[in-house]
Image (tube, rainbow, N blue to C red; front, side, top):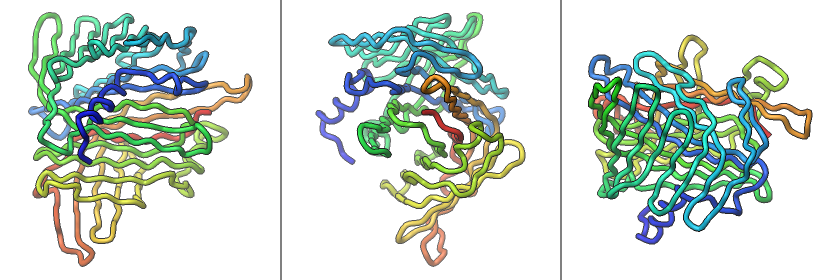
Length: 368
């Protein structure tokens, strides 16, 4: 999709504003970055960092057995919004540092200048400067300083926006994504700086509906292609943590399969498909086998996960009913990538584009 300058500005401003219409009981706002950092010493396991700023229109919610309260409603002004929220992050540097950050924050969103700042034990922020993004994360004696640049000539890296009403009425899910940016910067510790490079992904999500289970992934390839998939579903998977401790993967009903491969080689969205099939193994870190097809082509690949972080949410409803959602995140690589025509002829494979780097999600349970 080609956006007009007006549409691009409207999309960009959605990142930095909260619409009063969305501020209803139960609404959940997320702003999160994923950073894929080159690791020359072990290219099979690139370093990764995820940071999330979030708030929810609830009195409280439990995350990883910690209670977080949101005592003050969002204070909306003409050019900013101030609210109580949570900052959360994990960091993989060869070892997974789960809940690297997990703390209550006073969050401020502003349009002039464009910025999000979290005032908490560890200062974090991201903002726009001279047409670029900058993200700063402080954690004790360590500081992450990311510079992010988008290729305006690449149609694939333009903002994406989708909104779905899975349920009747005003219940909905919307997501604004920035599919890929070039990443440079520094990681400093005790005054010593280490230069880094890689790529990054950003998404701003607004959820005003019961959270279903889902599979999701975003991956960047060395030569510039981008792969993503999303499969929200309901069914037996919601029972995990909600009445049973067993995960039942069969019998789930899809709520909107979507898989997209944007090929740098061909210069177009090479693949857009419904009816995605995802299979997970059960030993160690998972390997997700993903496949799908459209009228002309078939696609298949493996999501080979090499670490794991998770967030487990729990919430009380109506004073007595509890619901749980476990949200798993896996640093991963794309392997055995293949696109073939219906006759079985190879159109594109790992041999031409390399192994993708990115993150896979798998959740189960639900929140109401």
